[in-house]
Figure 1 (tube, rainbow, N blue to C red):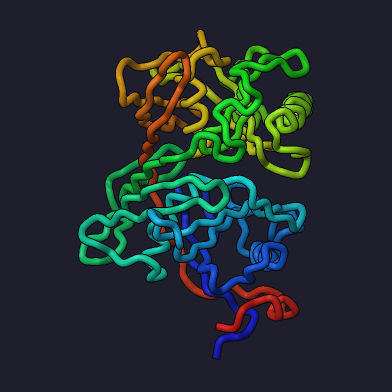
Figure 2 (figure 1 turned 60 degrees about the horizontal axis):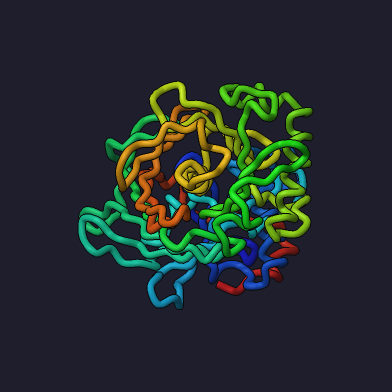
Length: 367
């Protein structure tokens, strides 16, 4: 008999992130109670997350909660939770495109979606933002395929591709491409672009912040004066974007831009927001690429853009690059995105039960 404090889950690598994927039926519906359970499962409020299955890094302290969707188009609802490490908070306000790469495979593994042939299109609604995404998962012989020849920077080896097509992601949290009403704002003497496509972001030129934008993740993380400066800008930007007091929220995220060095469109560093991302977030890449393509932003004069549409935008990051293909148009100086597509990979690491402290069993639905 399964213990009452045991929760079924699949531990999955999605893109360059990792975390447990849960069926919502096995978790409390109330967000506060759900947060307590997720934080306990991850071992949060401890810098090593030694009493849970978290990886003690922002990219490995993430969760996905899946359920059947009542949306007219989508079949799966995906709720993302960024779980605190040093505290037991869970932020449900952002999304994560890397964890999203595992949603299609996990939904198939859980039986929430049935395979439809050698490839299965899993239609997903992101509960956090309302965004709609189609994930194309390889399912030969009716099973999710994880082995393959696709490679993404930041992950060793190769795997089967997962194609993510993002739709309806402009104004994901704020309802507007430029939530402040302008493609450029000046905050604390620094020009920034406050933009919301798949993820609300504050984007600045690296040179305007006294860095090159080519620094390693470790060098930037060690520069606390730099983080103090961008955090002050982020807090003011959050207020101007209509997000309120974002002191305890990971939204908006921050990125800095510099000219490309290896044939891409731009060199960039992405912040989570209190650490530099080891690679680049998927939703962050969509938002950054939109900033490059939209006229009049801080990217003007920095980015090297391709001709024609669809446009492949390669963003150079600390461990390589991430590519996004944009279907868009610019009419009367206004950027309008139809869709953005990325290639990611995912891999199931284990499937089983995670045990939370017994007092939390009262929060769990009976299974």
